[in-house]
Figure: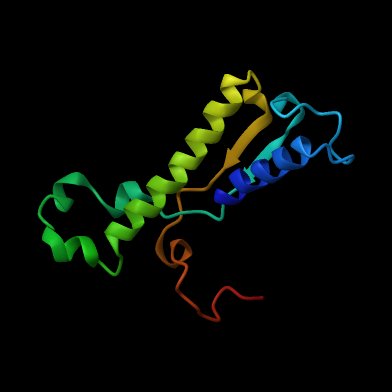
Length: 124
């Protein structure tokens, strides 16, 4: 997600520098940008955590619960969501909302949802 924001930033810098590869685009001409942001997938958080259970965790529960680190998960997901919202609002404000698409599968479960599971199962 952050890569999409960095890419938009880099293209905008090149436009400001009047790089011939991007000229004569104006710096705020997001109608000429087409951004497709493809995520790597994320766990199904609706099943992973819920408010009733989280209310009883205490400090240690937020640091380790069910093999996960909820505090890190919450901050990571919130940060990625804020970047997505920021880009979407920017394109909408510049009347180019159809030029931005975020694709993210948030229905992964089990080991498919973990980035720290390394097994031979599933390899071709």
